[in-house]
Length: 309
Image (cartoon, rainbow, N blue to C red; front, side):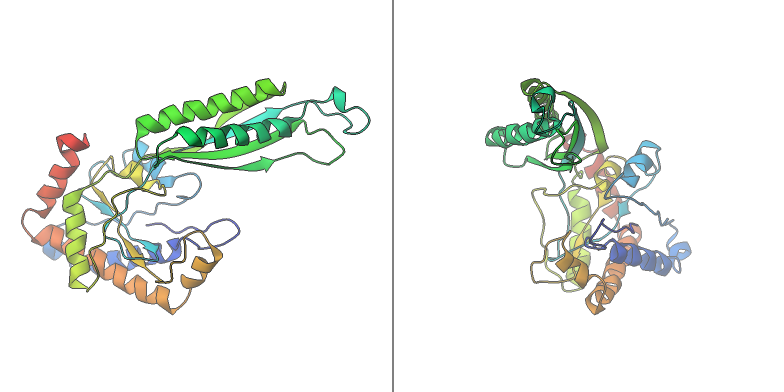
């Protein structure tokens, strides 16, 4: 269960709705859990957007003994499943030498130039990466005043790919861009981890089929995502136990996540309707898992199958 907002734009990813539907589903299922002979836990997983709460939980073995973990995210389209890219975040801190930018610029070493160069170098690197690779960054610090040669500048970058091996190679290339940028303008660069390493979401066809059946019962289309786009710490949980991450549309106007426009849709009547729909889907999936023969076994087989190891 996630409940978290984005800096500056609020609930533009809909975690307030996701958390509410998980809680409602958990409360509803608690009324029949003894009758079906199973066990359900509602696990709060905070800070997905920044520090990756599920990463820490996965490392501590929280998800290891579960037959299934699942939650529903919001979107502008109904989707049976999600596919995520693996992600690494890096912070590049360039250190130069301050001086008067007009009176003695020759005495300075411009750390901001180092940041500018790494952006240019990465733009050139993008010509030679696969289609699924994403590299995007911001200037987190760029100097204090126009008349001072910046002695410190900081850039933050996210690097994504659907394959961890590919991501590791691209990350090494990005680090080389930073080192080359520092060498070119005679500054120094310190490289730190910006955020936890996020895994791709491990696919589970049997689990997707379970959610598709639930969607069908509620008159929703069987849309499936074959290729990843964003990233989430739920990918780390998916390598501990079978994990499902369907999405429900709170709007059909094509509004993108992480925008102010999308934030408006997650605090009105459409959001309340989606909470109830999502809770019903999660509850139905749990009932099917316990009652319909073979579902739990097929989900476990997909999780442990040779192609997923």
